[in-house]
Image (cartoon, rainbow, N blue to C red; front, top):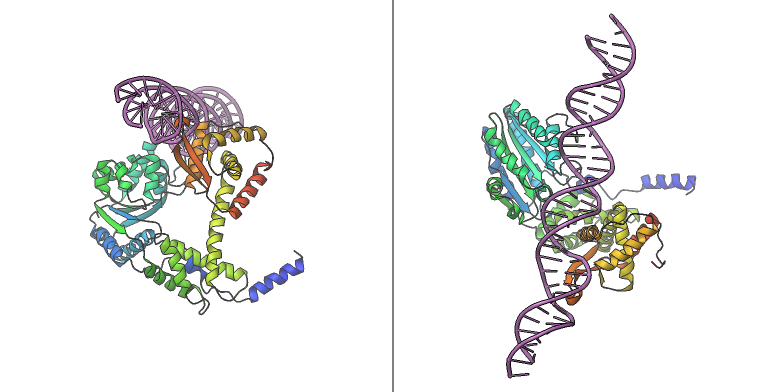
Length: 407
DNA sequence: AGGTATTCACATGAAACTATTCTCTGAGTTAGG
DNA sequence: TAACTCAGAGAATAGTTTCATGTGAATACCTGT
């Protein structure tokens, strides 16, 4: 772009009135002063945690609910209030919130404990120390001063799925050895059957109390959206019925409020970029597509090389026929590897990679039996042709392969 | 025809291995007193 | 002698490989009619 044109563009941009009054309030974890339709859950949580104010140990809590039902928001909200009260009254309560899904931060036993210690201001190396050494340091650190620790473990299922429940066992057991301090665990999970895989001992001590977050229904999502929209946009900018439609979209997806808010935000961004003044219902469709596209593009570009080749093979084979099998993918994959001078991985591993791609929602892999001709996975692509083409393009650019070459 | 046994082509699981990143320790080296 | 350097041992972790075992149903093979 020419320099003049560009600066002109920026000036225009500034002159243009923004659609947003306060875009911040459409951010996912923007904490509101009021949370709609979660009064019961808030009350329950507060009741359970309140004993901490009398320096008694609150029961451990387990919070269930699907994504976007306000679990994290509620937990943060309640603990924030609790903390404020505690500070006023000079009651020693410490609250630590950890999201166990964050890579490199808290997704293993070692890292979680190390992260907790960092909250206490201890320096813990990211590797090199034995795990029980870290436990010891943790133990001593907590013991140093008398206080109640409320530990919120978000997405706890991820952690346990990966590293087993030993960590939870240790944490629940640690209480009996502490003289001064006490720990209360608040586990948050969106996997409803998660506790089934836990050791019974852990299960019973972790879920002394349970709180369930049901999905929002369409009306409730509407309310939530309205509340946020009122803050976010200048008035009269939304087309009539847009909120309702947006809520309907989200209610279809098991009442995920997070989804709804994102949809609204993206729709607004599209409108703004197109320099329109009003957000229309049709923008929601565009927004939905854009979100999906961004998600896929993001996933594909960040895949490791081997995964990309597997995906490339899959896409290529899928172009020719609708049902393809693991073995076929592996054959093509091996040839492609030769082409890019990469040592091929074993079929065992490729099987796992296919599962991973399936989990990410890019492809669908279903185990079927072809009777006499063995058992395998039937694999197909999940996306529409626009996105598929986009994927192919990314992969070709990235791998330096040719689409039309015969392998 | 009807029933049973085989068999394929992988799936699925567990354990072991590899490579990388990092700490800690103690031996050897160096510089200053 | 104190400070410094540096190699080696031990850990955590991610990504694989190796080895072992499992498995659903289309076929092959019987069996008795």
